[in-house]
Amino acid sequence: MLWKDKYELGVPLIDEQHKELFRRVEVFIQTVRSSAAWDEKIGKVNETLEFMKVYVVEHFNAEEGYQRSIEYPGYDMHKKIHDGMVSYVLSVSEEYEKSGCDEKLMLQFAGKLLAWLINHVAADDQNIASYAKEKGVDGNER
Ligand SMILES: [Fe+2]
Ligand SMILES: [Fe+2]
Image (cartoon, rainbow, N blue to C red; front, top):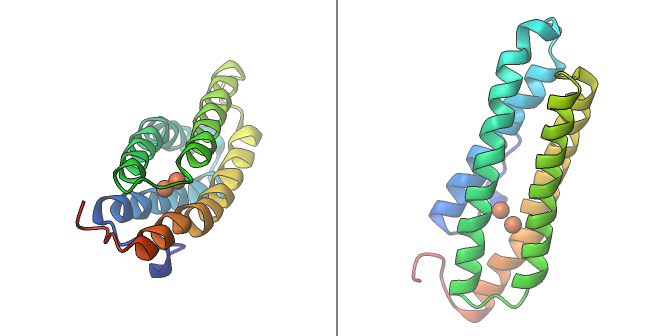
C-alpha cells in the first residue's frame, strides 16, 4: 500500500478521496505493468482511466471548496496546479483514444500519475493542513 497515514489532512472527506485515489492508481500501475497481454488488460485500463477522469475532478472540487472555507491563502496557486493536472489527464486520454489504446502511452501515464499524486498529496495538500492547524481551524469544524 502506497498510502501513508502521515498524508492525512484531518478532513475526513478529503482523506477518504485521497485513499481512494491511491488505491486506484496502485491497481492501475499493477495492471499496466503486469505480464498479461495488453489485449487482456485493456478493459481494466480503460475503466480506470474513465474513473480517474471523473474522480480527479470531483476530488479537486471538494478540496478547493475546503480551501475556500478556511480562506486558504494558497488557493489560487493550488487551483492552477489542479487545473493543470485535469488538462493533462484529459489530453493523455484523448491521445490514447486517437492512438487506438497505445500501451506505451498508458505505461508512461501510470508512472507520471503515481509520482504526481504522491508529490501533490505529500507536499501541496499538506500545506493546506499546516495552514488549518496554524489558523486553529480543525478539519471537522467548518
Ligand atoms: Fe488532494
Ligand atoms: Fe490538491
